[in-house]
Length: 362
Image (tube, rainbow, N blue to C red; front, side):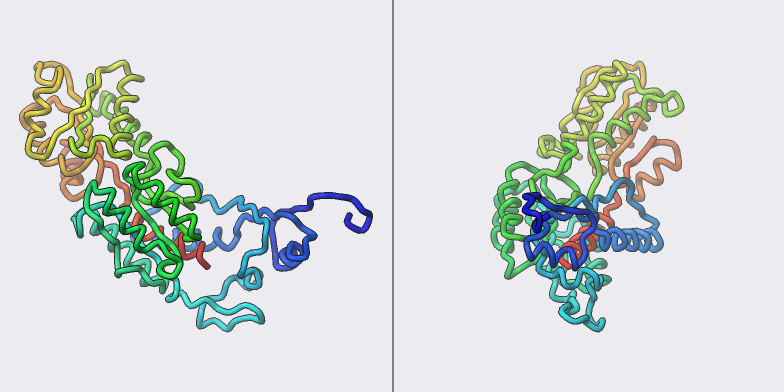
């Protein structure tokens, strides 16, 4: 086309080193990549995780389309499948020493709390399996509901001289700018656990979200409580910690319960409470203690389960479901006190980010 004097924008699918060479010469303006390396990489890791944890994840893992308008800096390795040291490097393509890949995980939670210990274990195991360096040897905890501390930590570590990639819990819009600033510095970033409440990534430039769709999960759980086989709840209460009720993922859970109630034409009330005052706050709730019907209670956090089971013992008509699977919820499901418990696969929330980010950095 160039020889005939035709002015055209030329592009194509499925890049290779030869097409990148043409792009470098200015003969090709864009290429669309499915990132086939990532397709096989993620498939292998998901199979391995299933084999040793029994955990799997469903849905699309979007490896593409990736629009490329300039050859990547390491495109000489494209046809050599990004060899990892000590593999013998190819001409023009050095092997990657994964120990030099530095990844950080930052969450706005208290240090080493029980729920996050399993997430932390997954991250540490992934770092060991992949041979990458996990900053500070595990998750960095900045304290519950403390956006300034979270932002300060990101400002401290979001430097290409310090880290190559980052995964974060995005609990509130207050931290969006700090996350965006990391991305703008060329650091690969994804979110975990919270930050996907709208069904979209919370910040432009995030690669992925590792977690669950809280609204949809809560709505599905509430619908389960309406079934005759479950006790046929005739009204709904969503229990949430008072100091956490405006956090994005917890608000989405109660919104999902409210949506299910509206669809079923049933009353709904959100009960903002604490572990210590759960019983009294529930009984004060509108229509709870009327002696009739079957109150459907969904706990937005598993920490409320012991108290809710005590309420169930006092009011046997209660129909109960909870977020977060643990030994107590398994026991309560087995003996019929609990209809369901959702499992976020906390271990995978720690493990998968490192697998995803390592593939991106390589």
